[in-house]
Image (cartoon, rainbow, N blue to C red; front, side, top):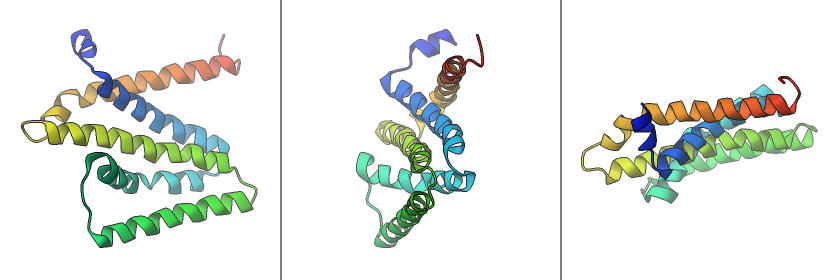
Length: 154
């Protein structure tokens, strides 16, 4: 286990941080705004992954998919506008938006590696479990620090 942990490169560490940020943003977003806003914003992850494929990997998408992405982004705009006008926490919506952005980064790292690998998905299969484990360790560390700052633990 320790040997494989030492073999993690900067992209694997970035992927684990992205996954930890994804999990943390949901928890923090729920504390800052309504649950429905958080879940609507976080359900945009596939759209952001598609945008990441276009921006970071260089894939092309059909026109109908582009229209779908624009309509989904407009839906998020409606949620943000509603949160702003009703006195809700716009900051909570932005924190929740870190979830799909983090998943986009995570997805783009592994997509780029899979495309660069000799065989299909060889780069993903061997270390995905390790990246997710390190993500949970990052999340536990942040949770412990926040709990200590709030005085919940000594």
